[in-house]
Length: 326
Image 1: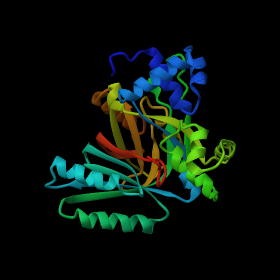
Image 2 (image 1 turned 90 degrees about the horizontal axis):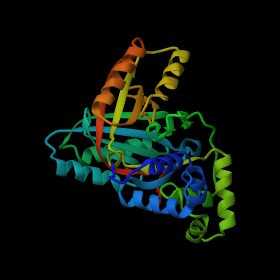
Image 3 (image 1 turned 60 degrees about the vertical axis):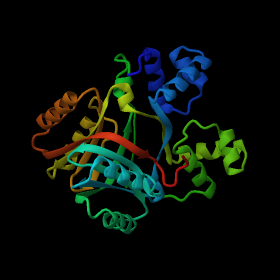
């Protein structure tokens, strides 16, 4: 954790984690600092690598986009080779998330595509390219994805966890070409002023403001969040994959509600594929992660059949929308 990180920084990050698009003045009122001091602290946190960027949570399911993840385990591949493969996927226009991990899998790649055939074409091309080192693969399709506020940023007096989620059941809609351009900008630039967005897409700030509000109203834009580096805050990024029995809907819903409140959980997601549920955690230690796994298995012994896990060692990409502006 940065040496000069204090409770005011924590409160600012907490505010940014809930709605990163708020102005420095609005955040300043919430944390009792001037807008100038808020700007200085945010800039410093970015310079120190705590804040990597400000992204926008976009309901791409509603726009007909499907999320797949490809898990790869390698053989006879050194670190340089794995990083070369990760770089290939980072530069791929259809990938959302790329990360090198330790544990069950060596590399995880998220894809945002229009259908299963599009994903399969891209996966087969990659597998053929790296066939000499790919030992094993797994594939999941995400049905339900939650984005939760980080509990370790919360004041203990205010334990409320804010969650936004999107699912494949969300009704489909079409958006205007200008909305598409706005989303591609906001995906990785959640705090960009409307005036700057307007300049980039050659329209007026008033039109951009109106279209953003409409995208929020329609549930296309769900939230604005800070993308934080867990390592910079002294945490580790863990991914837990759970194999579930075939539970009744009520029991599954209780499980989902429970895991959504577990300390450190940030992205619970229901999937179809090699396993049934995934949870991402940002935690202070591997021991804390192990304790959570044991607790979940104790709480739901007749539901959790098995589990796998991995620790994210390096992230190469996180674009929450296809063709996002970098």
